[in-house]
Image (cartoon, rainbow, N blue to C red; front, side, top):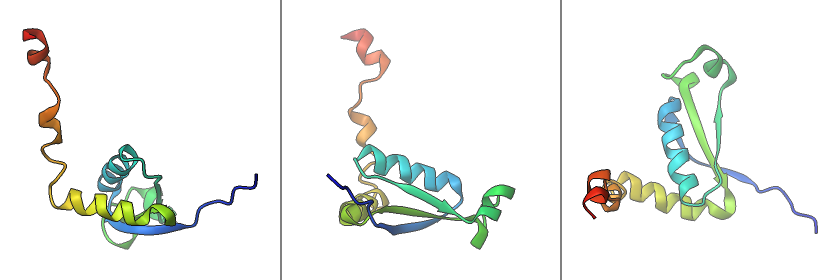
Length: 95
């Protein structure tokens, strides 16, 4: 069976590693493959502003629509309350 490598598409571009890593973690948790791409010079000297600080978030083309929906939900704040459903250690002690 000969599997071809996926064609990667740019989902979005962020400024700096922090936002890129956050979105990468969110997408990965939702089952989306992610690659981050940043200009080598910007990464080497730690720039997080301007063109050298931009990080492209790439996903396989077959997951692009799903990734766009997740990004849209994130930007709309639909993930903000998801931690409310996880019991705290205090709740577990009382149970």
